[in-house]
Image (tube, rainbow, N blue to C red):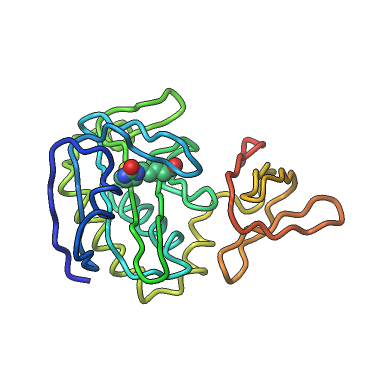
Length: 220
Ligand code: BTN
C-alpha cells in the first residue's frame, strides 16, 4: 500500500474528509492537526485538541481490518518501548489506560480506518499519552510512519494469532454491551477465527460480534 499523505490543519473529522474525497484512492491518508467533531466508536465523541495524532486511511474492506489496525498501532507503540495491549475489539491501552482508539467506517469495497492517538496530552483523566509513557518527546510524523509501516506488515500476518498475543481481554471478567443492545457479563475465554469475543457466563458461551467491552477485574 503506497501512502499518499494529505496533511490538513483543523477539520471536522478526518473520517469526513476521507469520505468526501473523489476518487477515494486506496492508500490515501488524511491527517489533521485538530478535529472539531472527532468521532469515536458507537456514537462517542473523540476529543481532538492540537498535539494528538488524528488520521484516516482509505483501505480495501476486509472483515479483519479492525483487528489489523489495532495490531499495527499496538506494535508501533511497542517499538517505542510502550507496553501497548488491545482491549477487545480495538482499544489500545498502555498500563490499562486508553492511549489510542480506532474507528472503521466501511462500505462493501472501501473502508476508512480512523486512528486517534494521544501524543503529548491526555484529554480525559482515565487516559494516557505517548509522551507520558515514553518520558520523551515523540513527533507525530514518527508515529504516523511507524503506524503505516505496521499496517503494511500486518497485511501478510496471521492476524488472529497476532491479535490473540496482544489482546489483554482474554482471561478477564468482562461486561460487554453488544451491538444488539444486550449486556453480557462473564469471563472472556478467547477470540474466534473471525475476531469475535467468546464470553463464558456459567454454562452459557456467548459469541460477541461487536460492542463495547469493559474489564471488571484488575487483571494480573
Ligand atoms: C474510539 O476509540 O472510540 C475510536 C476513536 C477514533 C478516533 C479517530 S481520530 C481520527 C478519525 N477521525 C475521527 O473523527 N475519528 C477517528
